[in-house]
Length: 244
Image (cartoon, rainbow, N blue to C red; front, side, top):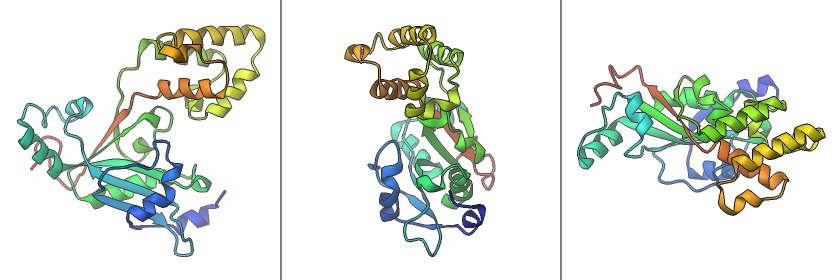
């Protein structure tokens, strides 16, 4: 684990797609991204590979939680006008990747917090399924809008809590599987019943045998509804209400 002095000497500088590709394998969504509007890296002069990278892209045309967060200022327009306004006013954070040896040190939040003003637009937004268990965007100053979880998901999360697996631990399938395997008979029967109920409508997946693969699938479904994040740049007066 790197010490604090190493982190203090890291600098954020403009980067390129090659910097992202060096770290892309560490991101849970994989390496493919669309066109990037800006890339920044967290690096040290003596380190060849960046410690972290953040990628900004143009924002999608329609997001329901964006409409809620911006009081529908981008809604109800013809498509051409809507796209023009969104491209002029919003950038999306499409990737934040930290090299595994440097995780747990607040570097993802630092990358977000220090680079959002650099893209020089009124609004920065992000979507992250891992926002349910790792709210680093919030720690960077963004506001979260969480979609309503499914009733089945809420019930299963409550069942996991009963056997001592809290929501913050759902990011690690191997740890969850290890806890499953250590359960006593009554708790094991209880959670197996809950698992079967949770995946009963998932086609052939409902017959998956117990094991790490099934646990990974279940946790993916629990965190599949992305959290929406938004940040209003204070440099722009009334950025969320009166985009230019």
